[in-house]
Amino acid sequence: MSLWWISALSLVPWVELRGSIPLALAQGHSPLKTFLFCTLANLLVIVPGWLALDLCYHRFFSRFGWVNRQVDRIRRKGTPYVQRYELLGLALFVAVPLPGTGAYAGTLLAWLLGLPRGKAWAAISAGVAAAGLAVTAVSSGAVEGLRLLW
Image (cartoon, one colour):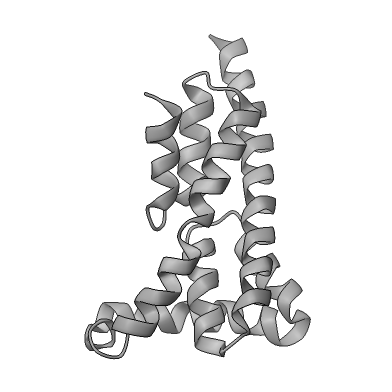
């Protein structure tokens, strides 16, 4: 599968970098190219995410209980980071390589808390880059380890 298609997985919520980077490395793609492609693709969700929230959240998304539960979960998980560490907290929240803490969740959290968009974008970008580095490093080691076993 081409790196373009794999990096497109970085645009999928709950998959983002955590799924696309290990897949690309398992298929033999270069760790550096994988990191760059997948990280840049994942950054593409921030601005459209804000626009979608601005235009659609109160009119459409907030009508669904599932969406409200997800919003509440992200608010509960992320608000303490931002209250304690401000924008660094937002970056740390996004950087945690666990499902539900990536660029989508960071954008939603910044939007919910009314953070300045330019500064929030920088913090989310730093978090995405840190998560990309962590996932690339761990996945590279895991893939190499599996190759040695085979």
